Amino acid sequence: MPLDNLQISLSAMIGQTAGRLFDLPDGPPAFDLSPSAEPKFGHFACNLALQLAGPLKKNPRQIGEALAVELGKVLGNLVERVEVAGPGFLNFHLSAGAQAGPVKSILMEEEPFRWTAEKPLKINLEYVSANPTGPLLVVNGRAAALGSALAEILRAVGHEVTEEFYVNDAGSQVIEFSKSVIRENLNHLQRIGWIINDSIREWANSGEYHEKTVEEISIQIEKDIAREALGVLEVGKILLDEDMLLELISYIVSSQHFLQTKTISRFNTNIRSYFFEHSLYESDLKPVIRKWILPSEIELKNCVGSIIKTYSLLLERRGTSNDEGAVWLKTTDYGDEKDRVIVRSNGKPTYLLTDIAYHLDKWERLGGDEDAKLMIDIWGPDHHGHILPTKAGLQAAGIPPDKLEVLISGWVTLKRGGEIVSMSKRQGNIVTLDELLDEVGVDVARYMFLERSPEAHLDFDLDLAVQQSSENPAYYIQYAHARIASIFAVAREEGFREDELGDDSLAKVDLTPLFTDDDAGERQRELLRQIVYYPGVVAGAAASYAPQRVTAYLHSLAGLFHPYYKKVKVLVEDRGTALARLALSRALRKVLAHGLGLLGISAPESM
Image (cartoon, rainbow, N blue to C red; front, side, top):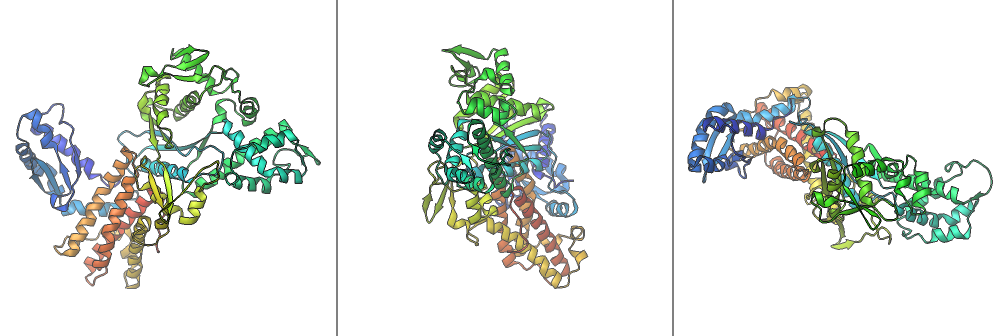
């Protein structure tokens, strides 16, 4: 059994009790049960009495007092007392047994942090989805941290999640990028026997990407390119004609995508599904490049992929209109401010039609009952305006708008010495994700990307990120985990047997010594309080798509543990007290490790 989410359990019992006590056949109105702000107000506070005042036409404090008496009976050994505070708030003080119970569950259960959702969903979570036109940048890293952490949080509460990367390999930008890469390799290609005519040279020299942007892939090309790599086995000179140019562009695009996947893997993500945009038009990239991207003439009538299926569906559902030779999707029928073009007058599909086709494809791939599946996209900070048209397009195709959740990953500003480190992909003023990871490491980068709400602008302080001190929140949390590991190392040195220190043995320890009335007892009760809250933190982070709730919780927990470590000796002479404190410490260590794991951050044994 997983660790009990007391917030959910208490809410259910409070609602049921109120329904019986006040004869509410439809149940009580919506109410809030939340962790109390301060220990003196108990563990949880509830506003149900205030919510009932209107329907019952009674004083909320009187309602609260009646509820408190009844709930005291119903909850039994779960609570020490239920108090009424202020105008009618209910404060729940958990019993010592209820506070100690989570520690024992964490130590006894095989998977204490793996919960079962009331309504499990099959979720396709798409994130990063960068164009294969250069290395991943810092802003991509923020989306990667957000997506991978959210996937783990959603899995923890019982959902099935597929992590997906949409590879934008069928747009004109891949040609512009390929031009720039070939430009940087012209001399090398000639040196190994390629014949390059003036028109190709002029075409390549018009590439707009800065040499720094294409530096990594250019080095890769120079190092790896060979006749075998491009499928040319003949010995002798190679003419860079249209066919060979097609091979070279395809090779550049696939190579750049491969380099991106290496960075993604390095960053502790679990993406296993890569969807290639070109497959919406044809199954292979080369004909898409030849027929549509190079001449910039992607005509819908020539498509054979799912984009034509999507277009036909929208026509069948009478969701389109024609004006001035273009085809418009009537998105205003679904709340958009204006209708949107999906096929231009020259026959080219727009980005919106492509996006609708992609979402319909992954909706089908999810399979199963419509009510039990969900798509979540994480888009860049400049995509706010595309949310409503995309949802409207899906509605026009028959998919309810609430089946697509779009999160925006905000801008990132790098700062060093208080000065901004600028980023521009084409100008060359870029900081790649790999460069950031080389400097600050994966763990710190992920934490700093995740500590604020996804859409908020993030100032990433490079000077802070490399500090190994309490000022660095990632280090501060990891150090708490390492300190607990050190306690157990010392315990072994002081003669505690391995069987005493095992989870099974510690789960059976009497935890009464934790509830003393001195400073140690007060600190221990506060640590126990935080363990009680952990399931609710994870559930709240999953429900609101907010990994920053986990980062805030872990930082707060570390902030309570470090002073405890300094002020309270765990390995005291009294064996019972020492074992109780060791059990608490082991449970805290497991919570810290699990929370860090959700964020894709390591939990070191020593630092």
